Length: 86
Image (cartoon, rainbow, N blue to C red; front, side, top):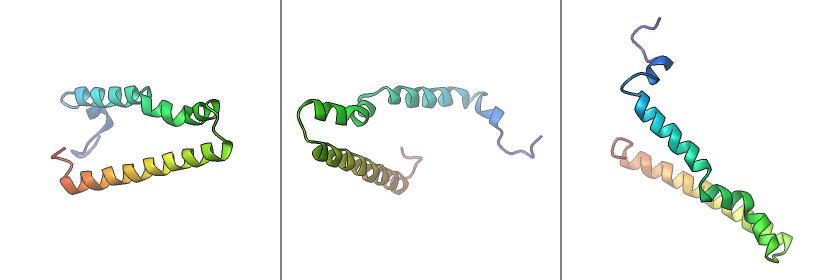
């Protein structure tokens, strides 16, 4: 047993089971959203529309760098605002 600490089993019991279900469902649905398709198929789309290979690679790099920067900014803003406020 535990000494009053949190357990994995507690995640699947009330009151945390429903919020956990919502969070996991949102994460799964996000994987099917348009942004993943944009990242995965952007090079195919751009090549099919006549862009040169070098340009396609540059755009893919810029998209990924932008994604990393925006993710870092969002983490900073969440920490600054306080996670409870969100």
